[in-house]
Length: 139
Image 1 (tube, rainbow, N blue to C red):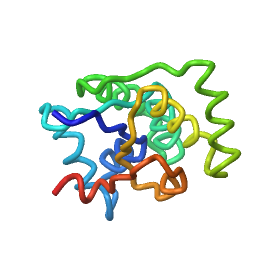
Image 2: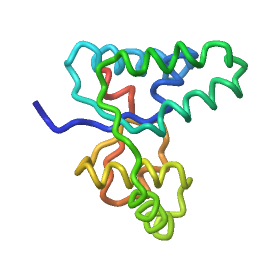
Image 3: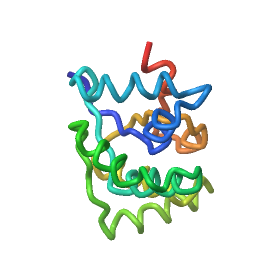
Image 4: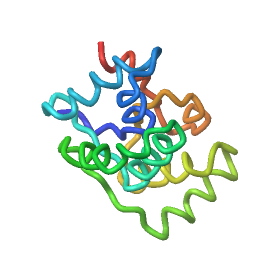
């Protein structure tokens, strides 16, 4: 099996809200993860980002069940370490992308992961990360 892919928070959120552009593909990516067809991992930042997006979207009452669902997929969820925050600052200095995305990148770097499944094109500004569009992964 190939190296694990890091799954960004928007994959979970777009699957949850059935986003018009990405919803079906993101749902498929999560099914692939759950079935073991796709080796995936993420970090503890993702459930928090998903919870915040859901709250902003008016789905606050479903946050706890959504987080339970994320952890039930069998996806490996890695903790955030203090050194990750320091590395995120270095990544930010070079790329100027969202600091949360820099933290995702820092966790990926620590884990030796180079591919992220994300709808967020900002990750393309980090030269060592290959962003995989969920619509292409799901096909």
